[in-house]
Length: 67
Image (cartoon, rainbow, N blue to C red):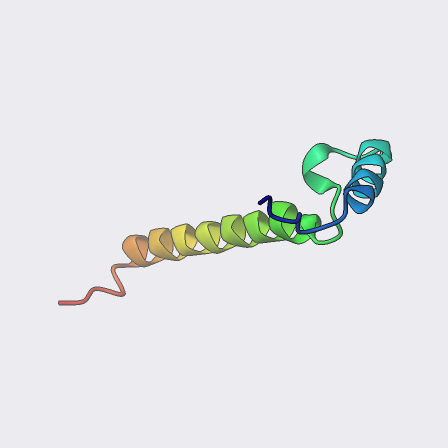
């Protein structure tokens, strides 16, 4: 007894044709891929630059020590 597929084969072929025809980079082809491939890394880079800058400022002025 074989299990039925999650989606019909025709739908899969339609999606495959669409993604192969899109003229963008592979990691930016989906509708929400710009959020995961661009926005989140930019946010993480910005947050890390901010924290590094704040740490350098605090070290140079001798503030922000715990004890």
